[in-house]
Length: 223
Image (cartoon, rainbow, N blue to C red; front, side, top):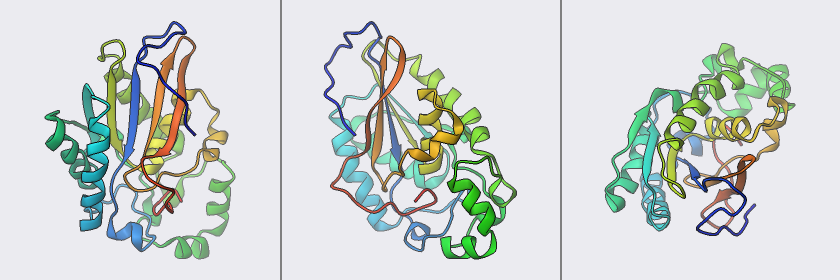
């Protein structure tokens, strides 16, 4: 999903922009293991993905950079720091969903052990996956961080948020004002791809989703 965007928003908004950038590849992504809040590092491929994406995002002239404090997000953010000089501010509130007993299991194992719970989640029902957080609780902690940081931007300023697929999806849903049972309709993000929200007079709008590369499979918790 993509729209043309001019340097100034013409419908009355301040024209601020939020880029929600998913971290690079990890070994658990490749193994299709649910990571959640487990602190898994990037692979060498993940670091290369972050370096490439950082060069593209630097062209947006970002004003602020924030990130989850989990190392896969922090190391992704570091690649943007290397090309822009922007120092990230880290927030625990931007971490991926805590998913309790699901964490470390493959998608096949989750469906075998928690089939009803998994199916309910995919239907958009409120589910504490593995006894962990509700998606609304993740949005409750992540979306306010993004909004507070966006409020610090100048008109037409850009905030880059480095986070995780599930956390980004629910944050987008909350900022767009979608009902939680519709959040699952937002597709997942490939590693090191991003979504862009632009501010208009009536609120935030989704300008791009899963952007940054040719189409690639989504490997991770939110596939």
